Image 1 (cartoon, helix red, strand yellow):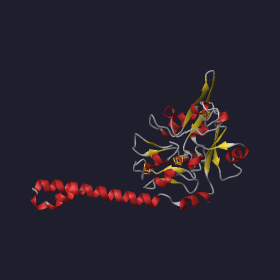
Image 2: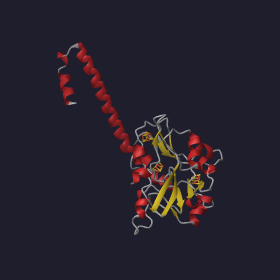
Image 3: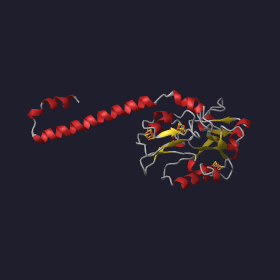
Length: 268
Ligand code: SF4
Ligand code: SF4
Ligand code: SF4
């Protein structure tokens, strides 16, 4: 910037081609500074909005899911159904199933952990989005991405503690699970629920005390992923063993939540 300003004072000494070059560079710098200022202003105005938390508490319908690990056989039918529903690119998933290996031979075991966006009540992804492309729907609490507003900055990917979001390599926009809202709004279940052979995924309104999801939560011990993050996930697990092979080597640890926002190969 300093050298650029110095060059501006030498304007009269420059040749026409040098002036044109200098003008282009100055326009570029001005545009970059303006864009940065706009971005920072938007960021500071959208982050840390306590009013949103109040909105969430007053929400009448909050769609959510209960995943009963006792019924999950790790078949990945849900992963495939989701991929088919949205034709997601190779290498990215809206929903998937983690395998957690534990123990030392011959006392080994494997548990399954179906994953998707938690449609959190305090979604950190929403609070950091500079364009409001990602937001929590007033009518049902589903967190979605308006891809027409997404600029692909990836702030939301960094902010999500669950690795639930990805940049679609085909579009350059961020994508993630939206509870198959196009199906739900037409009276259908999300595709992963519809296809789950074990009946392990149950979808419904957590705000309705008579819904099956509310009944399951009331009648069973449930956990959520990484509740220490304060995001208040709306996906609940029954009998999930949130431990991994590292925890298995520490006998004093009986129920440690694994860092499930990381893929298995990165966990070691
Ligand atoms: S799981 Fe991640 S992407 Fe989904 S609502 Fe929560 S913070 Fe946002
Ligand atoms: S990548 Fe898109 S949805 Fe995510 S924070 Fe940036 S603009 Fe918002
Ligand atoms: S389809 Fe159902 S049983 Fe199969 S892996 Fe997914 S959640 Fe588990």
